[in-house]
Image (cartoon, rainbow, N blue to C red):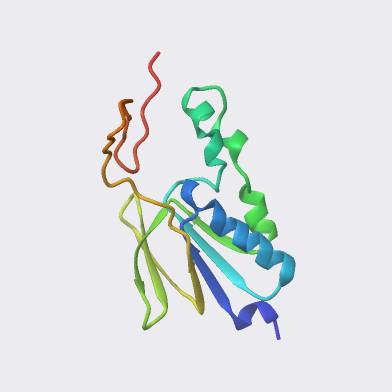
Length: 147
């Protein structure tokens, strides 16, 4: 019997906020690489990247590919199903199903046995009492580089 078929693990949040979630997966793979069937959902259309290096990408000094921590082949080599570009819309905890939607409005549902949610944080407001100004962008948008 294939030991990977005994337990399905789904992680939501494979985007810039969830490096901790992928780090958890890296550790699980070290401990028991054949134990889980792992599925990862991420709203962004690429694998996880080093968010500390996001500023050089925005400044045009590096590309997103240069700051990716685990590339597409890492997911494939480790038997991980990566649903990049799929935002989790809901979780049915009773039936143990993750529901996701992509930018085209297509939907996808995946069953799980264990669920790790690594969501990062969402900026809901930008208030500063400090004398310095803060620049804020709505969640999910990034400023464009001016020529």
